[in-house]
Length: 413
Image 1: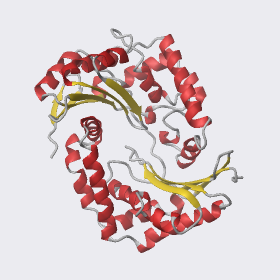
Image 2: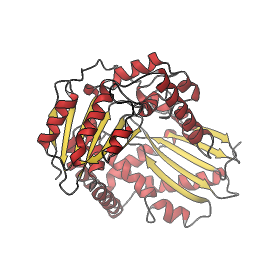
Image 3: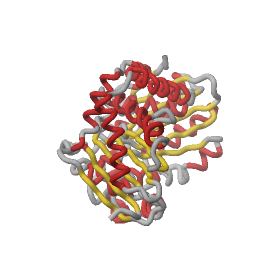
Image 4: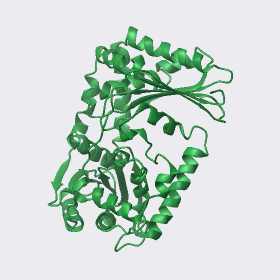
């Protein structure tokens, strides 16, 4: 049982605390309830841009990283469709440095034209490097706007196009910052070798003076249920042809999320999974074949990707995948198979939860989607899964009309 302590400031900031006496370090994790889904067409990529801008200095601290490094610490961040997460890892005796740094950029980020121009250039180069100048880098840009017609998941986290990043003005940036990066839109978790009393005292000292802000209302369009299969073909000079099959699935809070997760594992998690034993070993069609799920706060996707061996026709490869998916739907799975992959999930969770830094991030996310205490019942939700649950959810996900199919590569027409 993971013991979680809580405290809420008068400005709405939620503090979570987890004590780990086995380390001499502390992780200070700040999760903001803002991601790519909070953007609008023409201004996409803003949340990811702010991930960079938040390291550009604040009112009292011109450079974020230097004081942290001098204190023996390190920091990083990541942005998703739904959230932006920042974390600092420092020796326990220097933990106040992280509180000082995080509070100052939450309160008064230095949004100057110079800082904005510098980070826009960095993000534009990242866009080119990750999406335009590498094989398969633009797959997400191709699949998302076909699979999603209304919801903002139709553009990637990095942004829909470079022009959206180039067009960000100081006014746009300031409005986005003040409308999202606020104590009443954030969750702070302090995990490691620090007492709850110390965590509360430091949180009150460094964050309580930051005023609440008016958060931009979230009124996202609901994605209509897909009624027929969708298809994209994209010719590109890549080393191999690639096939992508995307299927709408439930959101992270839905009771069927855990079954969806195990379905992707049954298909592609390791050398005992069905794609490996039934496709990669028994056919000469793919160099690799994988399945994954988003786990997004709004309904997301299960995505299957496979790279074809030379000379293999797209339709032949697609047919083999469909056959394997239909086997799952029509023949079902055994309870033994379900339990095997639940055991793998339990092993992964045990190893991840050894890390106080990983724990800090997980607790913030569980708190956002429900309650941090849910981390203690997560395994039980998987343990309750039956073969019938897997069969029922698989039929829904792999319905033919629920598919978006991409043929991508030198052989695509």
